[in-house]
Amino acid sequence: MSDLKPPRPVALVTGSTSGIGEAIARRLSHEGYAVILHSRSSVETGRVLARELGNAAYVQADLSVDADRVRLVREATARWGRLDVLVNNAGISQVIPHADLAAATPDVWHTLHEVNVVAPFRLVAEAESALREAAARGKAGCVVNVSSHAGVRPKGASIPYAATKAALNHVTRLLALSLAPAIRVNAVAPGLVDTPLTADWTQARQLWQDRAPMRRSAGPEEIAQVVAMLVASDYLTGEILLADGGLNLT
Ligand SMILES: NC(=O)c1ccc[n+]([C@@H]2O[C@H](COP(=O)([O-])OP(=O)(O)OC[C@H]3O[C@@H](n4cnc5c(N)ncnc54)[C@H](OP(=O)(O)O)[C@@H]3O)[C@@H](O)[C@H]2O)c1
Image (tube, rainbow, N blue to C red):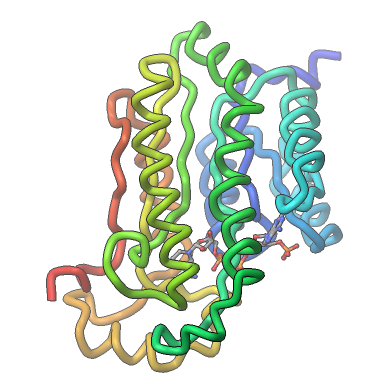
């Protein structure tokens, strides 16, 4: 069964049927990784993409459910008997004007927190032993969390969303400290990226055109490039890499 154990490293990219996650999966596949694709409900899209990429497999799991998180890591690791890279990309957002405190209900807080903070942490916990084995093979295991500029600056789709990304940034640094040197943990914090999630965010797009030094929002493949840089590194850990076209400078 040699085809089940390619010598190539294996990367699990959550939320990889759309937007930034799909671009990351394509990029890592292009760079020689076997890729585990994942999503919550877009099963057919995931299967088609897996066939298109080759050396890829798709696993469905709802990251708001802990049993699904555990199963996802188990199935991803079992597919080729190893896991070298975990990209915690899947995330959800809700647009709520920051001044509308009543609209940011406890339900909104809990839902966003489960998917954007608890799930990435739990996936790292479940993948820890497999990622440590990567280090034993000669290259540290690698986690990249997809955060947001909203977790760094007092901005973003809503206060609960921004708070989840700030929490994810802190979790990134705490895990980097706890898991080094066997596992590196970093985050990329994108500004506005053109994906289905932001398709109708016209005001934000205008803001980037008017104010960002790069004068535009990012393409998903440009965030994938940053993720690939973090994955390729042998030394970076605990970094939160802002990728916002320089908007934070203004
Ligand atoms: N787009 C931006 O401007 C921007 C900026 C900063 C940060 N980010 C972050 O980047 C990440 C990706 O964003 P995107 O814009 O590429 O989003 P997207 O196009 O909406 O894609 C989200 C992906 O995550 C999956 N997903 C969502 N909820 C899930 C759940 N409960 N369980 C499992 N999978 C789930 C989706 O699967 P299904 O389609 O099957 O539901 C989909 O594959 C997110 O963490 C987001 O917060 C985005």
